[in-house]
Length: 172
Image (cartoon, rainbow, N blue to C red; front, side, top):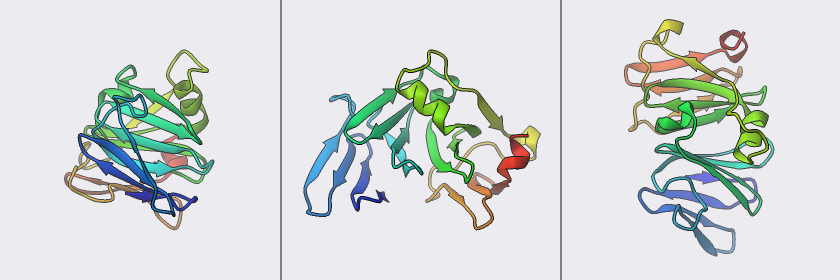
Protein backbone atom coordinates (compact mmCIF):
# COMPACT_ATOMS: atom_id res chain seq x y z
CA UNK A 1 0.00 0.00 0.00
CA UNK A 2 1.18 3.52 -0.75
CA UNK A 3 -0.34 6.96 -0.17
CA UNK A 4 0.73 9.40 -2.88
CA UNK A 5 1.19 13.17 -2.66
CA UNK A 6 -2.33 13.67 -4.07
CA UNK A 7 -3.65 11.75 -1.03
CA UNK A 8 -4.71 8.75 -3.11
CA UNK A 9 -4.27 5.32 -1.57
CA UNK A 10 -2.82 2.64 -3.87
CA UNK A 11 -3.50 -0.92 -2.68
CA UNK A 12 -2.12 -4.04 -4.32
CA UNK A 13 -4.63 -6.90 -4.46
CA UNK A 14 -2.59 -9.98 -5.46
CA UNK A 15 -4.01 -11.62 -8.55
CA UNK A 16 -6.54 -8.82 -9.09
CA UNK A 17 -4.39 -5.75 -9.72
CA UNK A 18 -4.29 -2.44 -7.87
CA UNK A 19 -7.14 -0.36 -6.49
CA UNK A 20 -6.68 3.41 -6.24
CA UNK A 21 -8.88 5.27 -3.74
CA UNK A 22 -8.96 9.08 -3.79
CA UNK A 23 -9.66 11.43 -0.88
CA UNK A 24 -13.42 11.43 -1.63
CA UNK A 25 -13.57 7.64 -1.38
CA UNK A 26 -14.01 7.13 -5.13
CA UNK A 27 -12.03 4.19 -6.41
CA UNK A 28 -10.81 2.68 -9.64
CA UNK A 29 -9.28 -0.68 -10.42
CA UNK A 30 -6.11 -1.05 -12.45
CA UNK A 31 -5.45 -4.49 -13.92
CA UNK A 32 -3.56 -6.27 -16.65
CA UNK A 33 -6.71 -7.18 -18.58
CA UNK A 34 -7.53 -3.51 -19.16
CA UNK A 35 -3.89 -2.68 -20.01
CA UNK A 36 -3.45 -0.56 -16.88
CA UNK A 37 -0.82 -2.90 -15.36
CA UNK A 38 1.90 -5.18 -16.67
CA UNK A 39 0.79 -7.89 -14.23
CA UNK A 40 -1.95 -8.42 -11.65
CA UNK A 41 0.59 -9.87 -9.20
CA UNK A 42 2.25 -6.76 -7.77
CA UNK A 43 4.52 -6.43 -4.75
CA UNK A 44 5.55 -2.78 -4.61
CA UNK A 45 4.18 0.68 -5.41
CA UNK A 46 6.41 3.79 -5.42
CA UNK A 47 5.75 7.45 -6.17
CA UNK A 48 8.99 8.96 -7.43
CA UNK A 49 10.35 12.50 -7.04
CA UNK A 50 8.59 13.55 -10.26
CA UNK A 51 5.20 12.27 -9.00
CA UNK A 52 5.09 9.30 -11.37
CA UNK A 53 3.87 6.05 -9.80
CA UNK A 54 5.76 2.81 -10.42
CA UNK A 55 4.17 -0.59 -9.79
CA UNK A 56 6.45 -3.64 -9.76
CA UNK A 57 5.51 -7.27 -9.58
CA UNK A 58 5.95 -10.69 -11.09
CA UNK A 59 7.77 -10.22 -14.40
CA UNK A 60 6.41 -6.75 -15.01
CA UNK A 61 6.68 -3.04 -14.34
CA UNK A 62 4.12 -0.27 -14.77
CA UNK A 63 4.73 3.49 -14.92
CA UNK A 64 1.73 5.78 -14.36
CA UNK A 65 2.11 9.48 -15.16
CA UNK A 66 -1.15 11.28 -14.50
CA UNK A 67 -3.75 9.37 -16.47
CA UNK A 68 -1.23 7.79 -18.88
CA UNK A 69 0.04 4.28 -18.13
CA UNK A 70 3.03 2.50 -19.66
CA UNK A 71 3.64 -1.21 -19.08
CA UNK A 72 6.50 -3.60 -19.74
CA UNK A 73 6.57 -7.34 -19.30
CA UNK A 74 9.55 -9.67 -19.25
CA UNK A 75 11.22 -8.03 -22.28
CA UNK A 76 14.22 -6.90 -20.21
CA UNK A 77 16.51 -9.05 -18.07
CA UNK A 78 15.50 -6.95 -15.04
CA UNK A 79 11.81 -7.65 -15.61
CA UNK A 80 12.31 -11.41 -15.87
CA UNK A 81 12.40 -11.38 -12.06
CA UNK A 82 9.81 -10.62 -9.42
CA UNK A 83 10.24 -7.03 -8.26
CA UNK A 84 9.73 -7.09 -4.50
CA UNK A 85 11.15 -3.70 -3.54
CA UNK A 86 11.54 -0.37 -5.29
CA UNK A 87 13.07 2.84 -3.96
CA UNK A 88 14.48 6.03 -5.46
CA UNK A 89 17.71 7.42 -4.06
CA UNK A 90 18.62 11.09 -3.63
CA UNK A 91 20.38 11.14 -7.00
CA UNK A 92 17.23 9.93 -8.77
CA UNK A 93 18.33 6.34 -9.44
CA UNK A 94 15.68 3.65 -9.12
CA UNK A 95 16.71 0.62 -7.03
CA UNK A 96 14.90 -2.65 -7.65
CA UNK A 97 15.00 -5.43 -5.09
CA UNK A 98 14.23 -8.75 -6.76
CA UNK A 99 14.12 -12.42 -5.91
CA UNK A 100 17.73 -12.79 -7.06
CA UNK A 101 19.49 -9.50 -6.33
CA UNK A 102 19.44 -5.74 -6.28
CA UNK A 103 19.49 -3.67 -9.45
CA UNK A 104 19.81 0.06 -10.11
CA UNK A 105 18.87 2.09 -13.19
CA UNK A 106 18.53 5.73 -14.15
CA UNK A 107 14.99 6.86 -13.42
CA UNK A 108 14.92 9.05 -16.54
CA UNK A 109 16.26 6.32 -18.83
CA UNK A 110 13.85 3.79 -17.36
CA UNK A 111 10.92 6.20 -17.86
CA UNK A 112 11.97 6.84 -21.49
CA UNK A 113 12.13 3.10 -22.13
CA UNK A 114 8.75 2.56 -20.46
CA UNK A 115 7.27 5.29 -22.70
CA UNK A 116 8.91 3.57 -25.69
CA UNK A 117 10.97 6.69 -26.38
CA UNK A 118 14.07 4.49 -26.58
CA UNK A 119 14.37 1.05 -28.13
CA UNK A 120 16.88 -0.54 -25.78
CA UNK A 121 16.35 -1.04 -22.07
CA UNK A 122 18.45 1.30 -19.91
CA UNK A 123 21.78 0.25 -18.46
CA UNK A 124 21.18 -1.68 -15.26
CA UNK A 125 23.70 -2.22 -12.47
CA UNK A 126 23.33 -5.48 -10.57
CA UNK A 127 24.59 -6.14 -7.07
CA UNK A 128 24.87 -9.48 -5.34
CA UNK A 129 27.21 -11.75 -3.39
CA UNK A 130 30.23 -10.66 -5.43
CA UNK A 131 29.61 -7.12 -4.14
CA UNK A 132 29.58 -8.19 -0.49
CA UNK A 133 25.87 -8.89 -0.07
CA UNK A 134 25.25 -11.73 2.39
CA UNK A 135 22.49 -13.06 0.17
CA UNK A 136 21.18 -11.97 -3.20
CA UNK A 137 17.50 -12.75 -2.90
CA UNK A 138 14.98 -10.55 -1.17
CA UNK A 139 12.47 -12.10 1.16
CA UNK A 140 8.86 -11.70 0.03
CA UNK A 141 7.49 -11.64 3.57
CA UNK A 142 9.40 -8.55 4.74
CA UNK A 143 7.48 -5.31 4.50
CA UNK A 144 8.62 -2.85 3.42
CA UNK A 145 11.33 -4.62 1.48
CA UNK A 146 13.28 -1.45 0.63
CA UNK A 147 13.89 1.97 2.13
CA UNK A 148 16.24 4.97 2.09
CA UNK A 149 17.89 5.89 5.40
CA UNK A 150 18.63 9.39 6.70
CA UNK A 151 22.06 9.49 5.06
CA UNK A 152 20.77 8.43 1.63
CA UNK A 153 21.80 4.78 1.78
CA UNK A 154 19.57 2.21 0.10
CA UNK A 155 18.34 -0.56 2.42
CA UNK A 156 16.88 -3.91 1.40
CA UNK A 157 15.78 -6.89 3.50
CA UNK A 158 17.35 -10.04 2.09
CA UNK A 159 16.83 -13.65 3.07
CA UNK A 160 19.71 -13.54 5.55
CA UNK A 161 19.49 -10.02 6.96
CA UNK A 162 19.73 -6.40 5.88
CA UNK A 163 21.78 -4.93 3.03
CA UNK A 164 22.89 -1.29 3.21
CA UNK A 165 24.14 0.17 -0.07
CA UNK A 166 25.89 3.52 -0.52
CA UNK A 167 24.65 4.52 -4.00
CA UNK A 168 27.64 6.69 -4.97
CA UNK A 169 30.08 3.92 -4.00
CA UNK A 170 28.07 1.06 -5.54
CA UNK A 171 27.56 2.79 -8.89
CA UNK A 172 31.08 4.18 -9.30
